[in-house]
Length: 176
Image (cartoon, rainbow, N blue to C red):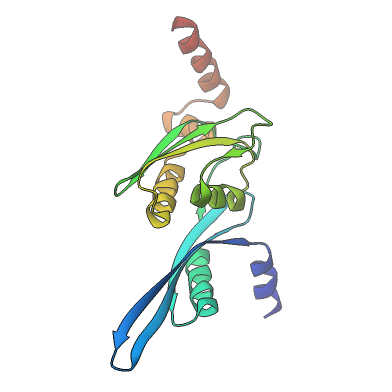
């Protein structure tokens, strides 16, 4: 029980959205709640969950548990930003994530901001196009984050050293 609490304490969770839905029955209306929660360890792991229940705290608890089961790891540059720019899509939503220089801060809309704060990103510029639905924005953001690669993984995939990969990047920018 104690190590379960210790493991849970390393995560930061942010409530992104609560939706109240009503079912009309013979005696009146029955209300239910849906919660969207983002969970992360602020060191490169993040996940989101969606929970539904008759009471708000129960919906949040369910969403938090689901988010902890669906964590993904994102490679970060200097533990503050992304390695490269990336585009993510989900439904009608499209998000553009751009790496930023130190001191920029998190320039992003509400649902995306929650993802970046729990992920541990300090400097990023993000733009959401299309939908403003928080569910689709979070899913599009996760789609983009899953496409992120670190120079180390690219170099190993190509059978190169990271220094060779960085040198080639310099040659390409000189030619352009």
